[in-house]
Image 1 (tube, rainbow, N blue to C red):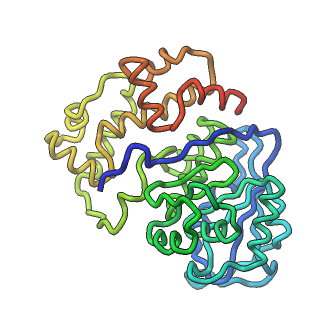
Image 2 (cartoon, rainbow, N blue to C red):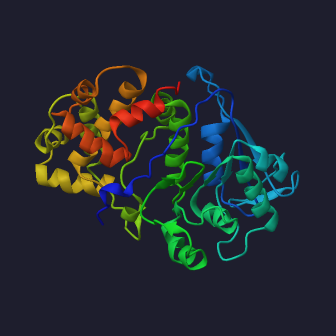
Length: 338
């Protein structure tokens, strides 16, 4: 299934300039699957002194702090903090709900509303959007959740403008992401908002993740994942492209690196990545331009040329398609982000 060019993200209208160590709270509950929680802990809970920026203070919270909670997989966990700490954080995260068909706990709903009244940034991953919607915080907004829950979500919360095709939606003070792995994309996006592309890219590299994925979850809806004997060949071509972004790149160049015929390369590349080779190259060039836009005064035209775009018009066009803003607006927004 093809993904519309606009389906990747909804880009922020503003950026929060870091002046101190931010607090992040995440809610846990009995019977939860550990993946989304683990992603949040990995990204925000590990100290990263090598990045030389104030990192996050992560607080794991539950309705009943101190009570052992069962996790999928046969282990238990205990949260130190309660809903008072949960609601008091700078960024409040709900990574799932116990049951998408059940009512969300009134105590959790009130904690979310209190956090929103205070001006906290609220974030959901996967089914966590049900909690934000139950609190009325998504009414009249664009939002997303896992594609499996889209129909149910739209039935229960018709006042929310649900987009089930995107990986995440940034509404400024309220952000939502799709299925589990899309939470990683949103977490990296939060770092990019708070600390800029250079820091986000550094964290992505440590996690062996792309700093930004184009496309949306539509490409994964009931789609089988095909085994790829050419995986190493595709990866080799991608690595070569990243080393030659400033140069003209055509499909034949990439296919040559993979030792495949161009048509065969295009087919395997699409099956492995969900996009086309040249579209992927364009996104990598845009990602390479972000630190240049953030960290200096190089003219926009020269930034585009430095990452391989043949004209300023082409650079601006593709930048707007991928990032939902212009290069100059992005530079203004992130100029104060360190």
